Image (cartoon, rainbow, N blue to C red; front, side, top):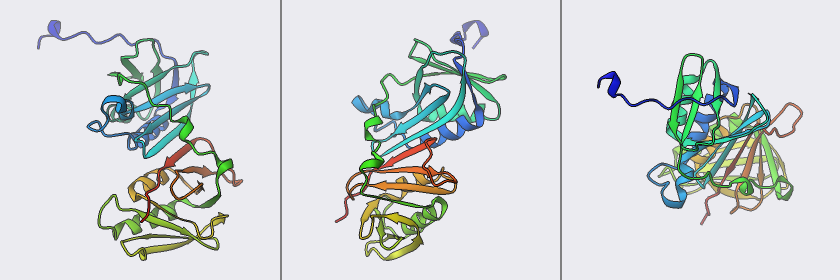
Length: 267
């Protein structure tokens, strides 16, 4: 195609602020894994196929959901003014773009033209079509820790490894693994008999003696993966979603990452 016949690229609007490219890439790539596959995100589910990026003061909220998981990262950013904004970009496209821009500051533009997203570094500017639907309002689906019947706190890496070991003895990827609590321990087990591939971990648990719930290992593992150090999980009932957050050095749950995982009904 000759240069004169090549379609004109959309003009990049003024940037609304700047964010660290590595932090943006880490958040977007992880969130994209929790988005709904495009072949399933049709009709009124179309908004689930994107990663949602929204300005919230001096932070960006990066969110995604497939209705079984909800992921929200909060990363610092420097806005150029007081105005906010949001973008909803197809998950795979935004993940690829964020990885390309990693390693340097990234400028993000929020415009009234909801059909185009623009991210730029000093050497690369990427424009992308946005999802022609609103991101679902998932805020009300984050469980209230104050209404939990109990919670556990433990090493996220150890729990993740236990989930992976339990999944190895499952017959199918969607088969549930179980978390069973008793006396400051959690037993993570897979397999149809419930005892194969079991790992018993020492954790801090409050009001969970005798509590058992099941989760898809791929979903639960994906939500634990970004957490370094301690993770805290709040439980309500075996059939209601759990809230997962990192814990800082003082033992308090931090707000820079929150995730929700739906359980699997056990027979």
